[in-house]
Length: 483
Image (tube, rainbow, N blue to C red):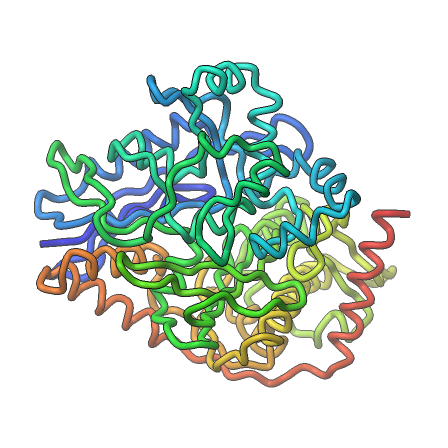
């Protein structure tokens, strides 16, 4: 018997099967990105649903269980009776509600939001997006009046349409700003504060267990795991003990560290979150910090002509650009952890007549790494980070970047030996939920072991001057945005 894992991400949906032959990719479908106005990022919910269903359909006939990883904060609304979506998926990158969260902050509401949900007031999280849907889409208001409105993150939509159960898991709910992190239930005061009707939200349940069944090639198969993609990657890397952490460098960069049972203490900028919960067990908590633009910043640099081929940025023959007076702050869509400043924008500082494209490309990679180092300092203030830190995602394949990142962190890195760590984590959790006797469970465990035994990049810590200069660059980018 095999395990099917589906990673429904920001740019694509991928399906992996884990069985006696190890892990193999059986489906991959890219979906369109829609940018209808500045700051707005949307997906077509029908397209995402088709992609997930198509990945289920290509599963082999011996699938014992399915695990699904979702985007996290991306959300939408739909009709409880027909299942039809009301408007687009509003993606986690979208900042259309920046004015709303700024106004709530000015009204002194951030303290209660942080106290209850653990999250800052930022349009990254789902609450203000869900409220926007109720406020701005007439059909949503009509459905709410009739008791037919369903609101949720993308996982709840997929589970409702494919498994027939309108539910979400605790890790995804912890990313909305609507769940009380201490009780793991929707918080009535937070729902009222944002303007989200709690009766339209899905019940919150565990990340693994009996989550219903989905159709795989015409056969109903247990859905045994459903959780946020970043949390699934933590599980796939084998991080279990407090302080064990991973970094994923995809469109954005996300660092998560395990803290253990119970809500972690408040920290400077890093966010307490739920990593996962097995049925019948207490939730496992952690800390999370994000960089909005990582691979997105590198792709932007390529698009504007700073380099043509990715091989050009695998090595640089000069010392760090920041020590040569050139810095880049990758705040193209704003700054996340620990600053939480959506007004900031990408900024080069120190350009001179002898600056060339390679210098600027090098500064972009350095900027991403130094932003991740800021996140790591925030996490490390609450839980000592274990070395090595696991690293995966597209940028992990760049040897120069991996070495500079290790140096910036002052911690060794373990670059994953497998590409689809998120899917591996979802599969491993699903396999455990249905029983270790399945061959897919053994394969999931073997792949998780491979993910945890990658190439080690030893750190040579950068001089503190680097971090001081970058902090000054970040301050300049933030002050210019508000000048």
